[in-house]
Length: 172
Ligand code: APR
Image 1 (cartoon, protein in one colour):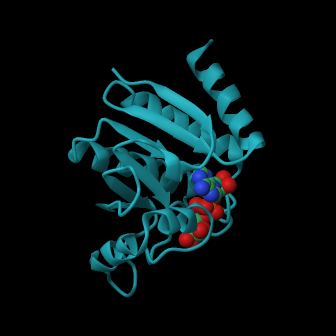
Image 2 (cartoon, protein in one colour):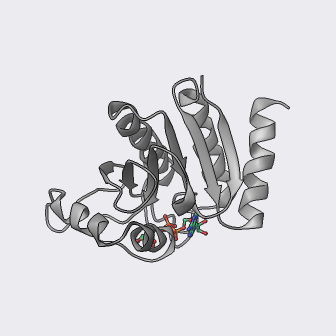
């Protein structure tokens, strides 16, 4: 039986089996949490990403997830998932749900006992924070019996949204 932990901090410090990266479809790094994870993991992570099969430069379509080793990070794996770009995506809710679901499925397929998520799509991809948080936590509650789940929020306002929403969902 796992637990859900809501933390304010840098996900690259997470001591878990799998760290989830909010990547883009090319999986060659970027800004935000993607940039932080690649910086902390070192060049080996990029080399691993470049080995992932691609079709027309797309290694990970929106809503899907890919797993690599984790370079210098404490974790055993990085799970790269691509969230929806809110104002562009035709089915942002569906794609964000898929991004979380597919990340959990990959973690379980690789016998992970713990996983850390950033707030996928809540930065550059502009997903409204409250709705994105509700999606993340609702899906996490379906997997908490099999994994210890950590949500790393990088700023106070988003941390507060997660804390409040979690309390509402679990009725405390
Ligand atoms: N640890 C935890 N969370 C972080 C960190 C960090 N070190 N750095 C940033 N964040 C937070 C942001 O504050 C935001 O709340 O991660 C959340 C997701 O923001 P982005 O990193 O911008 O990710 P996203 O909105 O999914 O956009 C993905 O951005 O970096 C590029 O290559 C990436 O093209 C992709 C796009």
